[in-house]
Every structure is written in C-alpha cells, then in structure tokens.
Length: 178
Image 1 (cartoon, helix red, strand yellow):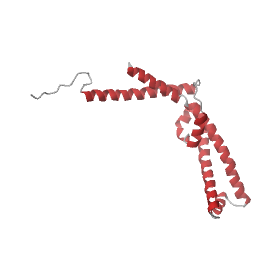
Image 2 (spheres, helix red, strand yellow):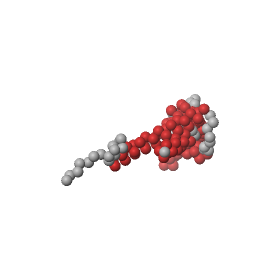
Image 3 (cartoon, helix red, strand yellow):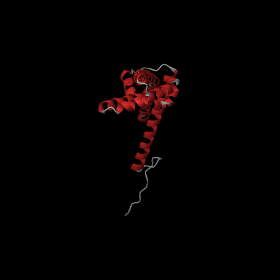
Image 4 (cartoon, one colour):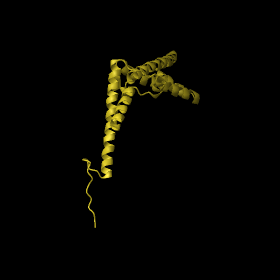
C-alpha cells in the first residue's frame, strides 16, 4: 500500500514538473530572442565602425588588438560578443520553427545558462490546459511512476536477498554444524 502511494506521488511529481516544459521553453525562446536582438545591435555597431575605416570586421578587430592592452581587451570582448551572437542566433533559428514536442527533442538548444536563469526568474508554474501541457504531464507522470517503481523493486529485491529470504518468501535452509 505504501509502495502504491509513493509511486503515485512520484508520478504526480513527474507530471507537475514535466508539464511545465512547454511554457518554460516558450519563455526561454522569448528571452533568447531578446538577447539575440540586443547582441545584433552591438554587432551591427562593430560592423559600422569597421566599415567607417574601410576594413572587414576581422581585420578591424586584429588592428584594434594590436594597439595596446586596453584596446586588446576591448577587441577580445567584441570578439566574444560576436561569437555569442552567432551561437545564440543559431539556437534561436533552430528553436523558432519548432513546436513544444520538437523543442523537447531539441532541448540541447535550450542550454544557454544565462538566458535560462533569466527565464526561470520570471517563470510562474501554472496548470497546463493545452494539449502539449497535458501530454507532457502524462509523460512526466509515467516517468516518475516508473522510476520510483523500479527503484523500489530493486530495493525490495536487495532487502530480500540480504535478509536471506527467497523470492517466494521462504527462508533459506542453512546447514547446522553440530
């Protein structure tokens, strides 16, 4: 009876947790889009500065870095902004056309820690009333129920083996030395 109650609780916990994925992934994408937009403004400014000098951006950054420690730091920061812009833009393009089920498959693209932390700060769990939310809740329930059920089965089997009980519940006969 306790096992059933525990596995039900695990299933409900899994359902509650996983049902939040569609909304969280949507909020993550919104934050990701905002980060890409802001970085786009910066990268466009870097291109404009390079264009004003008649240089490709890569050459502009190399020359800037050669001007001294302060300029080298600035060039390194700019290169980091450009690389982050490319990484986040690619992740956003991958996720944009995907629905909630495909976003679950593409969860590795929901991997930018800073964006995820900001999305989590403003995320408010809610009762999922969409098809996707209910589907994720069902999958979460099954996963939680199954995981705890398997864990309890292994614990029960280990306890029986350690205490000398056979799977049928009978004690093993031990030879007495007399």
